[in-house]
Each structure stands twice: as C-alpha cells, then as structure tokens.
Image 1 (spheres, rainbow, N blue to C red):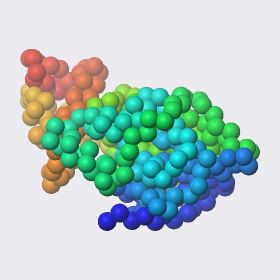
Image 2 (tube, one colour; image 1 turned 90 degrees about the vertical axis):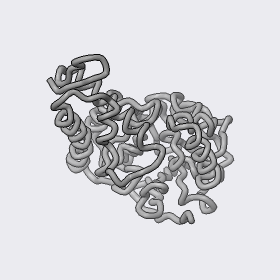
Image 3 (cartoon, one colour; image 1 turned 180 degrees about the horizontal axis):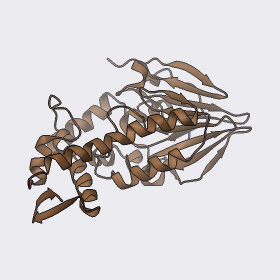
Image 4 (cartoon, rainbow, N blue to C red; image 1 turned 30 degrees about the horizontal axis):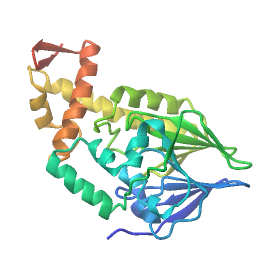
Length: 296
C-alpha cells in the first residue's frame, strides 16, 4: 500500500518534501518554493496524495509516473517542457514511451491509473530552456537536461542557490536512458551542463536527497558517470569475439540477473544499442559483418 506521507526539509527558502523511503521508487522527492506573490510545487509525488500542500502552479521535471502521482490533487496550472508535454497530457502516450510489449503495456496502463493516480492533463502547457517563473522575491529558472526523457528538466531556484536535478539522481544504478525517447548522447551533455552550474545545494528526486556544495556534487556526479563507463567496459570485454545485439542483451548491461519483468529486454536492448553505436563511432568497436560487432 502506498505511503502518503512526506518529511519537510528546508534549504533557505526552498522546502524539499522528502517522499517515503527517502524518495526511492515508487516514491520521489518534491520541491515547494514560496515567493511573496505565488507558491510553486515541483514534481508532486506519490507521498503527496491526499496530503498535498497548496500551490498556485505545478512544474513537472519530466513525464514519468513517480513524478506526477500527486498531480490529481492540483486544480492549478501545470507546466512541463514542451518535449514531454504530450506524455503529460495523455497517459496512453506516457505508456507508449516505455516501449513495452502490448500485453505489458496494457498492464502498465492499469498500474499508472490505479496505483499512481495518473490522469490525462490536457490542460498542461509547455515551457522551454531558460523560462523564468517569478514568484516574488524568488525565481525558478528551467534548465533543460534531456536524455532521461526528451524534456527532462532541472530547476535553478534563486536567490537560494538550489538546483533541482530530478532524475540525475546520483544513485548507484546510474543514468537511465532506456525509454523509446531516451538518449545517451543527450544525457551525457546534460551531465556536463550540471557540472558547470555552481549552486549551494543540489536536489535529487530520489534516495540521495540534497547534496551541499559544488565540489561534493561533482564528486558524486563522477561516480554517476562512471556507471556508463562500466557499461562500456562490460560491453568491450564481451566483444572480445563477434556478437550480435541479441547476445549482448542476454548478458545484460543494466539489470542484475535476478531482475525479471517485461521491461527488462526492451530496456537492455535500447541501452545496449546506444552504448554500442557510440563505441562504433569512436572506433573502439567494429561491425565485422552485418549485425555482428567486435572490439577493435
């Protein structure tokens, strides 16, 4: 049963609503920002259902179920990046973005409706990189950080110096770019962009919570980037002899062997293809014959 409870933690004028289990999926951390004129909420999580604090505006970092589960409690303007807007407006589009087999897609549709309370939000409108929301004495600026999803965005809150980086969450699982619209290339560019933004606090959507100081954030970001490098190393070791994408998928780059579910194969495939193509482009892997690849 979902836990509808959160804990408030304050960072200057920014309040982080820490979800159940420190925001681990299916929960997430939300952010409440109060100005003298308006109050803004970022990513209403499952832990806010039935206990949602009032807000004049809701921003969504990206259209995944754990970031919008509490959205049904808000009859106020909702905004997301224009590249994620279709998925926020339609649960069907959201499910399509996961690229699951038809039977699994139907079960996921039901799960999003019944467990995550995801409803179509045709009223949602878009923002773009650099859009500024002035709340009165406090501003929230959109920082487009694509890769996880096409519209995935962070938010820089001033004058507090708080950067919310959403699902650049610094966990040991590493960057997730396994959806239909995900991009490893974009994700890596977003990680570089985050590194260049100086802030006092960096807020993540999941277990790692808030990191204080740019130095500590960059150290943890290095570890997060290192997961992609480990996937590359695993792939190169596997390609000591020619292999197909199907063989690579069987060995797994993302999930541990005990993890099962209809999402595993398509996510492993999309991840493997992206890492593989990048290694081919850098000359570290060669397509020795059609559909068969080997380390150069």
